[in-house]
Picture (cartoon, rainbow, N blue to C red):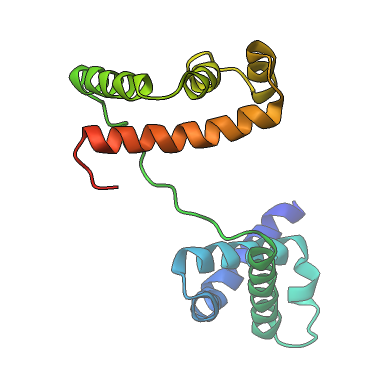
Length: 171
């Protein structure tokens, strides 16, 4: 029945030194909940090593506060070794677009596409409407990949200008 006497010893230690341990841990951490965890871990260590509490060498409170300090240091080191934790934010509901907005956008883009040269329109159709990669678009159009890159760059610029003009935005 050594377990029962060890538990009684830990209860006695907590009754006598628990407040001091908690105050010390809270002062070091600045967080009462974390301090309570540290005190609990220190008491578990005391329960696992009851001979330290009863050997008559040194102060029991001194040993307990040293354990608390070491646990706090371990926590701080572990926190520094991990990346900073980011608080989870509640999921923002996705903004639903009105069907009319989608149709209006499609009409605007299609009208702007009609103002592009055939080469520019062909590249954008391959890349965006057909979802092809640069290499796939180049093969479909029968031009080198560099030409697809160049045409897509200039086509997107021309498309942006056409959309801005249709919306009355100054370039």
